Length: 567
Image 1 (cartoon, rainbow, N blue to C red):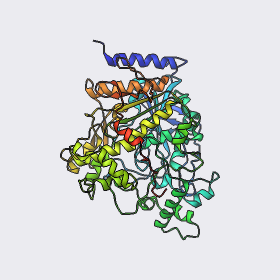
Image 2: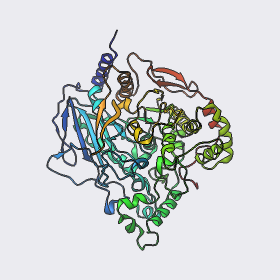
Image 3: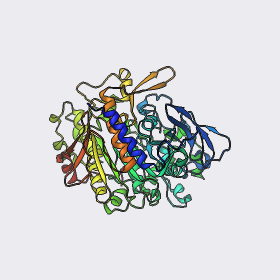
Image 4: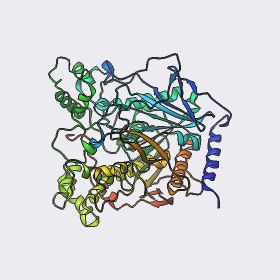
């Protein structure tokens, strides 16, 4: 029998040498690399040079808080790029302590993993998820280090931190007024652009090809990728895109709506009546900033009457000149080959966490329609129809019915719609991750959270595909005294490792050539809205047809409400 792992390696070697004008083994480098701002020195491990914490912008503090990123101060002596950078300020997830939680506003750094030899190598730039309020480029809980991708496939992998929550997405009339673009609110997205520009200016020195950059991200990272696809300011910064569990079909809030939230935020900080409100909010420590209009636990999956904020991209007229959904329909976007995908049971993760939160979210026959109305922006008539489309009797427990509706309205159906729009202009590929035996980093916390609810199966949950791209088992070894963690690789010969290698091959071949494929696996067809064929990523890879019933229901409804209510 042919060793599929060996075959995958041979295939990837052919792909990468074909993309490398010099031959990947002919261009060797040293650990010290000269960037445009100064030299950096990384570490070597098993054929990979890794660099951690390279500044791509100045610390956004003081007068630079809530301003577009600017260049860092240059340096002349080699800078040690060996330690994971501080994460951008954020609230602990669901009130739980986060391993390695060391927030700092001095957080605009990126990381590079590259083979020790080679030039003109494909580059993959990762944008992390977390609802635009959580996370980091090297996510402790997700194993998003790019060294295994670099080692297995000869791909250069870059990840970044970007501003989050109130510090990354605040719009305010005074901020708009001081801006040369007369816009505010998208500082986190502008950070991503600055990191992509850094890649264009510097990645050659790390062995990468600036003309062959693939932007990929999951959850908020997926929403970020489609945002960068739609933004004129990102033109030419990447050549391919992978949107994982995200889409831009739901309209972003207008600048006016976001500014109104910003005024409520300033009021919560006691700065509304200040003579200089910007000086007032910029003078507040970040812990007070994060306490003003917090996003709430579990991304709003637990309804509450407490004042909360919705932090994320804003339709500001500058970063976005039109709503992305309109750009994709008209072809007015950065036209590059694109993969769009989602997991089969996305929202089961969120509803499970909401059931574990305080107070716990409970779904009953009595409150089911009310909860559906909450997630449908208060549309009670649509909630009645949705309750009939997702009857409680069809699910083992009521929470799974709610999760199915949220999965379809937030992820699957908008993703399918967006793929159909993109496919009119660029080669587009659709996948659904269906492996239900995947592990969750949250399993580490199960003993402390009381376990999963009876009858509740996480299935192929939100984020379940990430370990099968990066190659790390998310069940970390955690020292609960120091909160230090140790990543574990998938064990050789396991079903997990086999699934990782197949998924990795599809993704990295797409990054190298623009056409995904895998030796020993099915050809991944270009998406066509009429045929609706997609790659089902499971223990056995298959090409299937999208079940249209549920999405056909939503296609007839105006369910994609803006992120901020009131628009």
